Figure 1 (cartoon, one colour):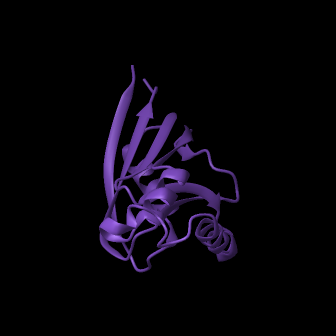
Figure 2 (cartoon, helix red, strand yellow; figure 1 turned 60 degrees about the horizontal axis):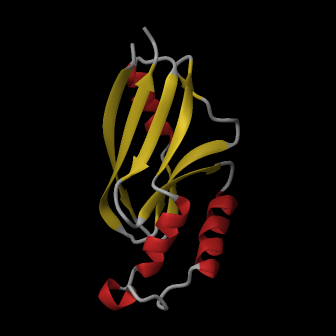
Figure 3 (cartoon, helix red, strand yellow; figure 1 turned 180 degrees about the horizontal axis):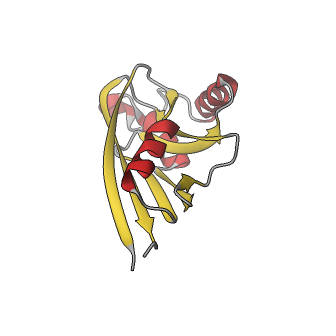
Length: 140
């Protein structure tokens, strides 16, 4: 029988564009669920935010992601900028994507040594960003 648990984690962001490591929050949510095996989905609510699994060893990779996206999707040249000036944020969020799924194996996230889960802010700073964590388990 399939079981599921869901939690909403809220964070605040302090930059227009940055990656925020949410791995420990996701791990705690998984631990609190008591579920052992299945899938964990991490989903960013908002059209200008995303979720990315990336190396978390040092900040250079996260910085490189922001620099790369700024180079391929610059600010201020898009049609939507006429409305509210954040077209690049929408495009970056769409390219990266709103969610990631991670295997749940014996109560632990199936991440490798170097993988962390990041909330990608492309239109901050924001006082509140919501992240939905859904755990689907086939435990019986």
